[in-house]
Length: 171
Image (cartoon, rainbow, N blue to C red; front, side, top):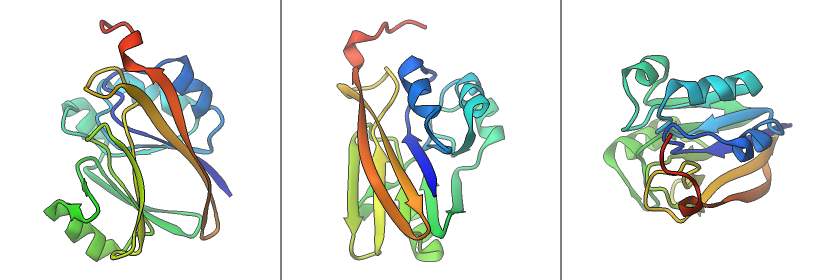
């Protein structure tokens, strides 16, 4: 059994709230737009991190990560990409990835919109954790935590980190 914390779109921002939940996870999955490499470094001090780079990530982050990350967690195949679309409107790269890999979980970020939906057509769980950072148009900062136990995805919980507008905007 693995406890997973899923986040995206930190845009160089990490705070005590994110760290608190990260310390409760066996693995952290970050769906891109990390921002500064230091965010990834902080998370990796806590536990194992699986991630992809996003469209705002610079050459330092991109040289450390892949655009697409497909992996196994317990007995569940996971595919992650930053810009993926959503069911049934996946972008071309995501459609190809889903057909090739046939993951049980498909993860993306980018939209800053939290969405969890079972895609019956592709027989997968689509997950976008929204945005945990302070930059963007989202109002609430969000993440998702859940457990993978063998082939089961369990104890799914949306974590609201508060209003983005109440955070200082300068670094």
